[in-house]
Length: 458
Image (cartoon, rainbow, N blue to C red):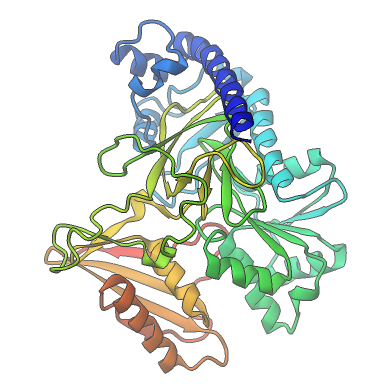
């Protein structure tokens, strides 16, 4: 079995080398952005896959600066502009939105990547896919919708409909697959309960979620699975990268589509390469809510105990089929636990156990403790009974404090909920986080990526 896996990995590496070489030849000659980067790094001829680790990283801030310096499109375009047929924008939740352009070939490549997600979730031509999203400039659900069509599914757009109207369409058309952010999946369940509708007995058989960490978090996945009476699958991608992560149905494994992406895994602080963990190595690791780092200002006894969690790293990706506007060694900011090939599903690809756990650029430090918003979210979901919440991170006199507002679900005792949350934060994070109870319906509900954390500076 190991020999067979090794042979499949060797063939995969050979295909990656061929694809990368052919892409690099075009990019080095015709793409001003990467030609300048690579020449500055000493590559006067197209690099090969063996050169990859010596090429400079690409960052989102760098791409944004390039678009500012070369308005309005930036210089990361390999072909004459009249060959591009699509333009989309990033969501802007982690900075200024990027504009991204696709040729017919690169758009089809994006759809082909999404097809892997559908296949991994067991979606087939007989399914009816409801895409619960307003079709704006964000690319994710456009690709989900068109890929469902190409698979032969009945694809149903949910744009410009209220949540109640979307629930009606799901029931009237007998949708079998729901595509939504995990946040909006929970919102659909909330409104359904208010209307007296039990989605657990609806036609939905599978839900696919992306856009933010969540569907790989056990507490969130359990809520979604029980609420819809369906199997829940995680998906990962980015406007500038493509749809790189797809499920396989085994545990919380999110496979990286290595046929189309070269993956690297780095120490988040030093940028040094990390080796993937052995398959199944993380089964007994702590939950996301316990993944906390203690920085140099941590209390005695905490500092040094977990200065860097060795099982977490940042994902760096190079896409191979988006030659018109590629990213090479792109620091995604996605933090997770990368496992080597050897998943019981039989795929020869590496995977993230538990999916994307956090965003590196979202982290903030409270009294020496490095905290990710996703870890707070995971603990809130673990306690349960919260309809919505909002966190405020305040900087005062060079100190950072966090305050949480929570809106309890109907029938939940607010006082008990507050105490349970504060106790869990204290035990897991060694932090006192004040919790205020918000009035019913007072907090914002989200359709796309939730933006529950706000930073206030003096």
